[in-house]
Image 1 (cartoon, rainbow over the protein chains, first blue to last red):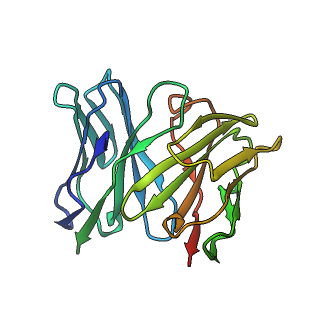
Image 2: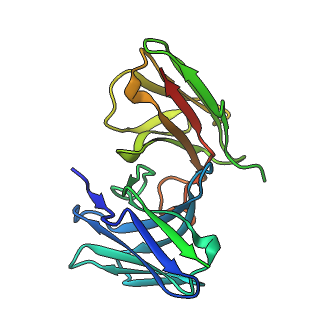
Length: 113
Length: 117
């Protein structure tokens, strides 16, 4: 049972355009979400997070939107840069006080110069 | 500040053998988590330790075990290796208790790539 789903395995975007990566979840108990980025041969690195008390969180070129009623979140990257080419994972913990993250299977973003 | 260090980076074993992987967290971090990454299943949670205590364990068989030492360093062991255990094993550390502590992020190492033949 996949509680966190990233239905697009890959995405290609032109440099300078917007990248939108999507994530759906089924567990209504999830109330905190994180996005990680992973380059080949490296461990994932934290990108941005959002709490369910918000519907948007912004950090520079990265914005995460949360739609609780649809159990959907999305990561927007504007403008996209070639260095953003990586695999992006969304993740959620079961509750406070845990690092037991449930990850989606990831979306590979390719930004074309 | 040194990052999370995992050793060995690559190793090859045969079925039935056992393996021990090591993780040194970022200095001052007391929480260590382990994840398995495979092409088919993605990133799956294995264990979480805080102050030498296992706080959570993922849905893996008993062949997978781990421990944390008083200096926060952690090891995981897989006994009676199977072909399906071939994966990238990632260790992550964090200073607080739970993702809502501090910035909530986990700091991952580069992983140990295990191949079982």
